[in-house]
Each structure stands twice: as structure tokens, then as C-alpha cells.
Image 1 (cartoon, one colour):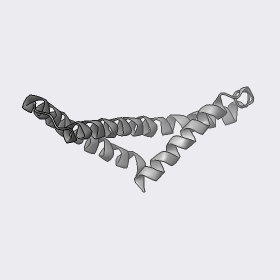
Image 2 (cartoon, one colour):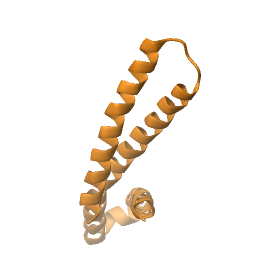
Image 3 (spheres, rainbow, N blue to C red):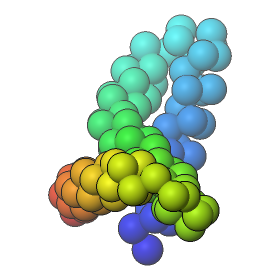
Image 4 (tube, helix red, strand yellow):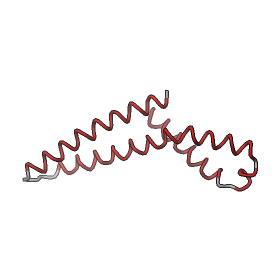
Length: 102
């Protein structure tokens, strides 16, 4: 549910980017201000969502590296340490997104 809500917010943000690039909208000051305010409110959520997806992608890449057999214990340890760090960032980012949404 949270993911679908975040995707809807991101979609609206992208729509606003297109709308605000229209010269006709820019000429209507009251509407333009309303839309830029809405975009500003959404930007924090959208930026955090992008960070969330990036972290998730990095976790997936590291997990796929772990599934490949390697004989280097040092490399495995390095990957596991990085995964641990990314998982902490992932959880923190998820908590921040929940706070921004609710």
C-alpha cells in the first residue's frame, strides 16, 4: 500500500513538472503559485522515494553478488558489511517515508 501511494505521488510530481513548463500556466499567476506550492510539498517525498529505490537496488545487486560463488573470504565479508549498512539505511529511509506520508 505504501509503495502504491509513493508511486502515485511520484506520478503527480512528474505531471506537475510538465504542467509547470507550459507557458500558459506560467502566465496564470494564481494557478502557477498553487501548483508550485503543491510540487514543493511533494518534492521531499519524491526525493526520499528515489533514495529508497536506489538503496533497494544496491541491496539487490549485492545479494546477487553473494549468490555467485567466490573463493575470496575478504570479498564476501566486504559485501556482507555493505549489505548490513545498506539494510540499516533502507529501514531508516522506509521509516522517514512513512512519517512523510502519515
